[in-house]
Amino acid sequence: VQLQASGGGLVQAGGSLRLSCAASGSIFSFNALAWFRQAPGKQHEWVATITQGGGTEYADSVKGRFTISRDNAENAVYLQMISLKFEDTAVYYCAARRGGVRYDYWGQGTQVTVSS
Image (tube, rainbow, N blue to C red; front, side, top):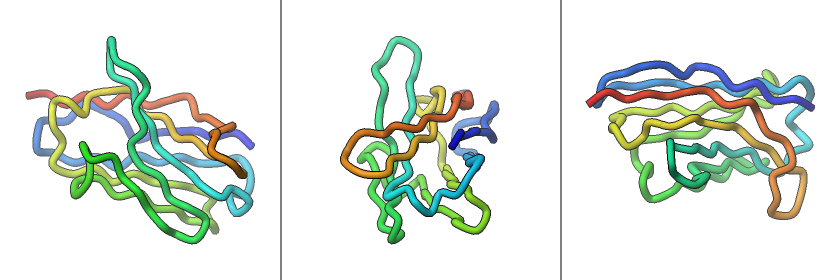
């Protein structure tokens, strides 16, 4: 299964963006899907996870502003981002895992740039 992230772009601080991650096959078998991000000069950072059952978790830095969701019928996972801040600027990656804690499937990344 391949993952394709899209939806990034340039937005002013306080604005919104919705990222999409389309899978080439069924995502039903994945027990978790997630979004990560990497800002210039910084380490890879976990952003949010959604489980097969629909449970969600968020990094403290995005809690209350970002919402992760999945559509098994569309084989897609989304990240709705509101109240964007300059520090949200990063390349965002979607990822998936079938079990355990390691994410084995990664999308190519989509750039999000927030201007202050």
